[in-house]
Amino acid sequence: MKTILLLICLIAATITALASQKKESTNPIVGTWKFSSQSAINDFQKVFKNDHDYQTELFVFEPNHAFNHHFVNKVGNLVKTLKGKWKLIGDKIKIEYSTIDYSMTIGYFYIGTDLILGQNFNHVIFTKENLDFQNVAAK
Image (cartoon, rainbow, N blue to C red; front, side, top):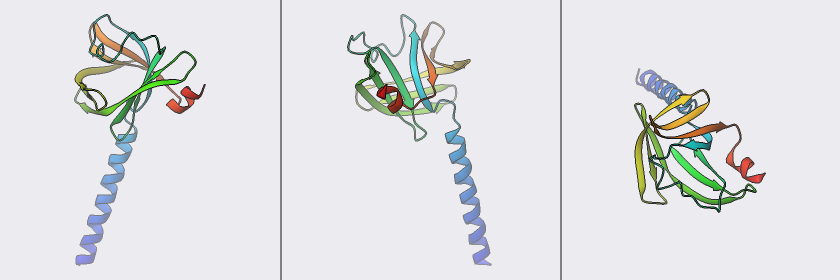
């Protein structure tokens, strides 16, 4: 009887873990996002600098709640990477940089395939990239 109960608990735990993994991997925010545009005032102004060493920026949100914020120059080479952790809290995302002293909790939503971080006229827009960052940087 104890063996059957233990087996049932083990199967239930396995199913729960697999369901959690599937939910995590299908999160629409997971993936590579390329900076598209921003409002004049937004929460990323301390991070997005008008630096001529890079042309674009990429956010890579990983399923394990880590992220990389890559700065790429005009020829596709990586100039700088900032790292951190992210988590969804209702209709907001908490982004905590570990390589710089900065964190924010901001609203997020989608318009078509674009990810909007912020709200109203205080936002940054990212377009979904279907490539991994390594492939983008290799071009």
